[in-house]
Length: 361
Image (cartoon, rainbow, N blue to C red; front, side, top):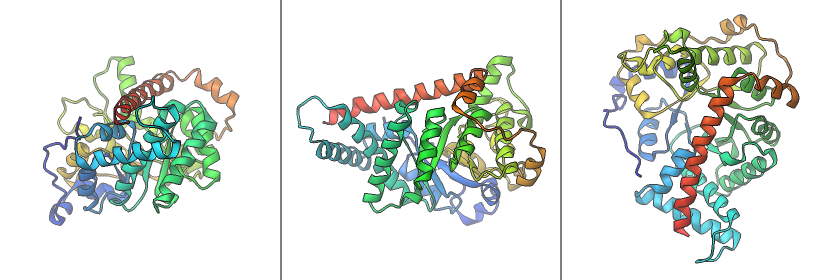
């Protein structure tokens, strides 16, 4: 499998066009990250000066493992060689689990190193999704990932460790943040997860408005919503308002977008993005960046404002414990279902990558 760059023309490639694009207007009020592991795509958008950060996930790392491009193949071979050397694994023997795990992390770091060289801000690298219910092992793997970056001369303040929004993942972030390792809590589908992450001191959360919308459409049978009434948009605005009202430093960075009004409506692919304009940060894949480049700057209006949204927040700052989180979580059907779905998908990608790596040993 190779990375496939869409054939859509990048209309943000020239300064003249930049002055008339919605993407530039959005970048004026929201920090933008690119959601891609394609080196060429990230490089192209980084050159516009509008993209600050980059996010990766197990899918991107799995794609890198399967890519025929010589650059990605070199990353894979280096990861395998590194893991063999560090764990004393012998050629021709069954590959120990620890060796495979190290190769997975090393490949993620190799991809991350390339992205760090392209964007001025932070790159998110994910801890093995299979450890999402194990705080101690997540912390251990996160420290190892950061150590590999630091050995390569990359400061830990350029990296965000991604952890799934389980209670255990959030508690791992709490430990790591105290060590100066900043974390991105991902697969966030509920206010409960967001509040727990903020209380744990997580640097950033990644709520998924599009997947929240998917769940509500399935429950209601509705084909679409007005963007301002999109359940995913409303969920993210609630999280953002809570952070601002109670002065949590946690950044709200939505990801994973859907057309609020339905895919058949022209221009609806960026509905959620525009409805959340002004939020702290967004991570956006290339096709939607292309769409924003093709739109007039007039479509961008600030719809998230720290003062206004904080004033509208009605949620109490209730302190969550292991017990209270578990009790509330039992009632959060959307959160439960979408978190499991997301973790299952990322686990499948990790297992694909393991198969690819075994063949390289």
